[in-house]
Image 1: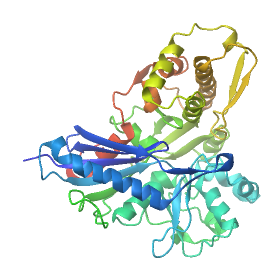
Image 2: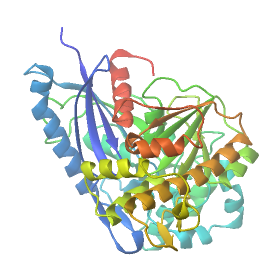
Image 3: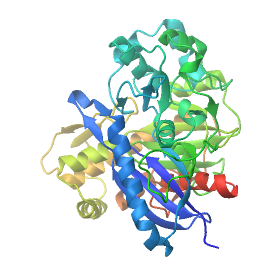
Image 4: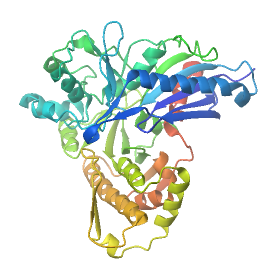
Length: 451
């Protein structure tokens, strides 16, 4: 009997990936394309629903074409699909499931006026109630921005990105707990929508679809134009990408940092129960989130910095746009001597804080080249990571080990830098931890394997 096949779909900040495995976890093929953002002035970044669905359709078509060769079976088909993706980004849909506005990137700067206009009682409750710092990154602020710029929210529902994709493929309309934890609309203690914040938006409880755990069976893929070998696959939402990445290698020890190094660099700790309201507020002062995990009943501390975004912009600044150029730069950074005038006030970097993301470079000396620039960004990231660790250690026992995952972890210079501030660093051997983790959720629909 041929093995059953599953697919993990990862909606990332940089790229959209589809990873196909068999139900035993053996990787068979991967397809990926750039996330189809539309970039505007001042760092504004939108995503049109039709562009996202076109990209996904093309990837699924490519998977269908490759399945016979990858499996040796001309009749091979995908039996289940799980969708993971970035948090904070989503679409507002009307009663006919028509998208009414583009999605904002989580790093889009719009919404400060809405943050400033938040009533004081909601502002005072925000971090303790939601586990998030109040700021332009959270979804509720972007929703308020759309409302204040003329979009009526009457009759609309909010779908986080993976939930929207599952709905578009034919699945049931739901809200995943881990993704809803990123919106500013969920009470972390009760697991229910925060009614006062919904009232502030001017919407009712039906603004959020029914809440479900990651991995819930949501029906079958039956959207028009799906390839025959994918039509009929079971569907589920795997949840927030960093958390899905974390479970790709099994359960995370409670004394480990799982560090996902994508556009955002995230340090993650797993808890068996939520922290107190006061502890959530204290951590939010350091821009650290205390939210629900993709594993039912568990919670996570999520401490993020935008070092991946800064590194990406540095590569672009230096006209490095391919893997070969990145690898050459990596070698040059590793060959740099420690210390020297360039790391002692010759160049300053700012922007890695999770509420920033603007690459700021101050150069006070001659001789700065791309390698010195990139190393300076890594060291700036170390400083920000060290501050986060200090805040985490004040609330929970210190971690003893670290697992690095994500695209940037493939660079030796990145690994060497983080080993200076993180304990017991090891590196994942998987190239796509999030997509693989999503595939595990898909496999659970068929085989009930445990993650």
